[in-house]
Image 1 (tube, rainbow, N blue to C red):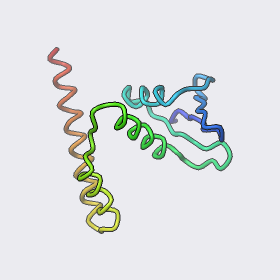
Image 2: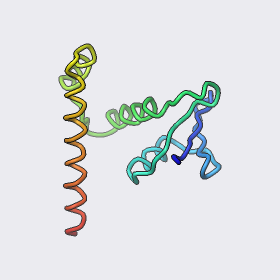
Image 3: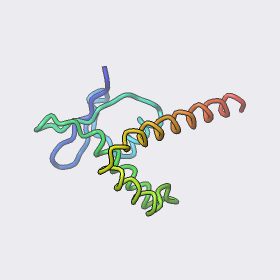
Image 4: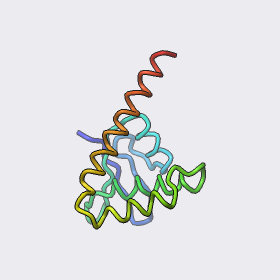
Length: 110
């Protein structure tokens, strides 16, 4: 079962496994550590995981060297109205999977 993080109306995040409030930085750490989790709205029970992950990416884009150029974001927005977006999503996922494999191989060499 995935770890459940509850999001309260006051924007606070509560980790049910740790029984304490956490920050977006804590959620980012869970992602980096490959922990499985979902973020759920306490009132509606709606899955907010994707929204929170996008928020983390947005904050990282503001605070570090950006990964996404405006041109790349324009392409993402255009794909939302195109049936070929399914191919693009599959390609991106496979690319990131390959990057992760490469990273793991490099880490084992150290």
